Amino acid sequence: MSDSNSPKAAESQIPQGQSPSGLFRGRLGAIATMHRKEQVMAPLLQHGLEIETVIPTDFDTDVFGTFTRDIERAGSQREAARRKAEAALKLTETTLAFASEGTFGPHPSLPFLPCNRELVMLLDVEHGLEVVGEAVSTQTNFRHQLVTRVEDALAFAKTIGFPEHGLVVRIDPDTSPDPGIEAPIHKGIVSEADLVTAVEWAIATAPNSTAHLETDMRAMMNPRRMKVIAEATQDLVRRIHQTCPQCNTPGFDVTRQLPGLPCELCGIPTGLVRAAIYQCHQCGFQHEVLFPNGVSTADPAQCSYCNP
Image 1 (tube, helix red, strand yellow):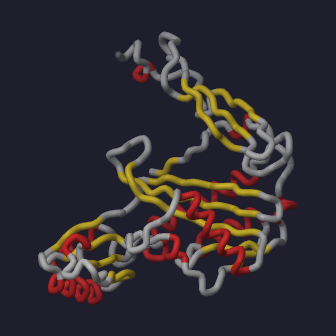
Image 2: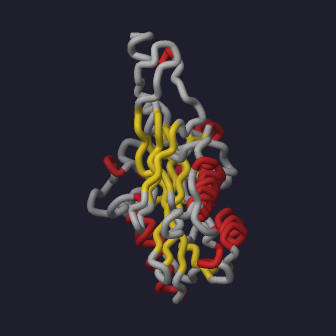
């Protein structure tokens, strides 16, 4: 199950500016990653924007935050992606960079379901552009578990797709034997032998004889997350090609959704989306698209009058 913030049936009704190909064709774009995200991002960017790509050398993205929480992310998801892109620009001395940032938590519409939200950003200092693509998916194995036996660790590993998906083993920070000393974190575990060794170490070291296991959410250790990064990259390319009909700036996309879709039975407005507002972040031009989800009336089951 994948979700997108973009209307699914509105693109044919959106006025278009000129193709943005001339802005990017033949340029070199830096992909800000140390976790092999270029494996899914580079082919899509090269084909979709007609560019070449480069990966910065000696680039440590962990300084911007880690999923294992040993380095907290500062600022929002978008701000973190921007900082990565800016750092990649400096390291490669290019004017075009791409960066991604992921988060995990409750689904925005279905809070009882965990989801992975990926953001991929284009930063073009030559043309003063910042465009973002997104993808949201509930197909994530973002999980953790405390175990006191190796057998329980191996059982947990099976549930998250190990060894194709990597694991992290640590001592629970709340039970560290010495609060003043940070206990080691064993990342990137992709073999049963390494998992057993790490779990035995944690059980033997922790005061409560408990190992903390969690899925390794770094892109190169998590094929499910890599797939969502690819979807966000595709969304970015789509948004770049969606240009403002007034000034031709890429990224002409939905900024607001208006409720009020009328009930099919009684005609009373419901809370479902009636229209989407597209806006250019450069010149401010706006365009309203009616019935962006491809339906002009709501199911009476969604009407507070017909189905109180």
